[in-house]
Length: 217
Image 1 (cartoon, helix red, strand yellow):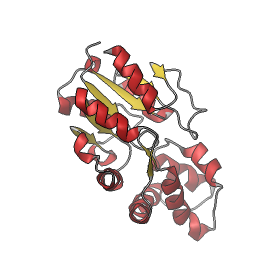
Image 2 (tube, helix red, strand yellow):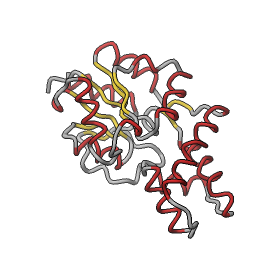
Image 3 (spheres, one colour):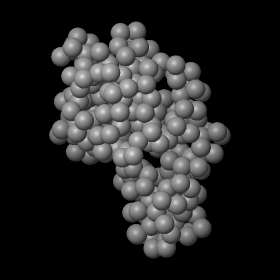
Image 4 (cartoon, one colour):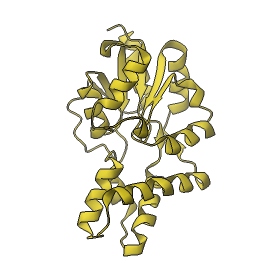
């Protein structure tokens, strides 16, 4: 394997943003007096695309709304919430990104919109580390479809054998695997029970992921 690039997921991999997503969804659901326990909600919907979450909630609670409108409202609210509460970086995220950038092409492939992801990256002064950023609004078919990773590889001019993806959920793993990439899964406390049998490597944190990559080199 001639590794040239590392493709990072965003939510749950680099940034612990589940609390912000939860708060945004609770504000969407408030008019219907629907509420959830935060841990239960995050465990169920970690990695689930926003539109799919909206479809599930719409049907489950008989909201009689259009799922895409719920999803759009949630995305707008996330941006508002993020202006008052910046999500924490995942353990070793900044350290690993900076080390990776010294040796490899670094890219971001996320199911978040640009309006959600870029302000967080800029807040931590990490945005300039990425050679390529592919967000949900850059593709027709977001994760778990392979299009986001295929688009990143095309923009970087790389073959699948020259890159590896780092993900934290089954949704992201499916996207990367379907694109033909080798993968490193770093489960978080919300996603740890998901099916990661397709992963090339399964490690406990980003520091361990970086050790794995150095061994590949």
